Length: 329
Image (cartoon, rainbow, N blue to C red):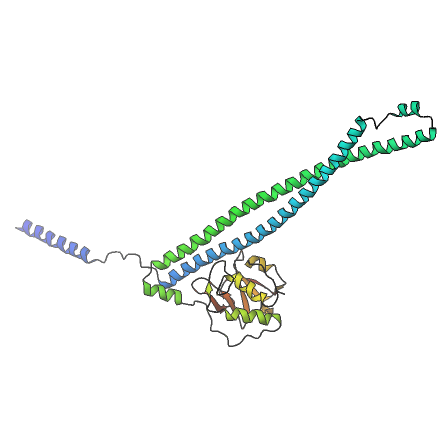
């Protein structure tokens, strides 16, 4: 009987243990990412795409320079080839004249000449002729060597262009890939959350009522501020959409200042300015290597083409990793 009670007690304890286990909360599944986390990831993807786009701008500038160099080299090569043909013709004519008897030996001249003065004149002429021959042959060698140098330079530039063209294709693919990934992240969110994310303006400041710019900078600032709210499109430079360097390039063009369509190239377009000396219109640069540019508008704020989710907006000067500033013009 006691044995039976022990066995029943054990059974009851076992059932209690099973029930307890059943009511222990399971390990919670990993929580869905918050809007803040998703926004941070999308912003990183947007910046990766922007960095690739700015490298693409740099490569296009380099490619244009290389093509100008190549055109010049090919023109030099054509001129050199023509000069070589001229020298080759001169040498050929000299050889033909020699073979036809024009270059009679000095001994022959002594035998046939009855006039010593004429002989001396002929001897002098023959000496000059031989010198001319020697000079032409040396010139031919020089011109041939110069042509070969130009051909090598032309081939080298053509190879660089081919490599850079391939790089352009790679950078464009990177832009497309990062942008597609950002869109994919957004599409995974519920529609309402996606709208909240896209409409959020993290780091965007209130629009200033006025910007105290003067001189040519005033025209640049006025143009940039007028674009606030426009779309951000990779590679765009207006009228209604911009990327970061496209906006600053177009803005300063209103002041008659030509800037390259590249943030890193714009960083080398004027004197560098300390942060404490910033004035409205100065260009401010971000990230290392440089891959974003905006325009300072005073009171610790900038106007810039931020990213596809934000467009052209006003933000704080230090809302991104600050590198330095340049004063165009």
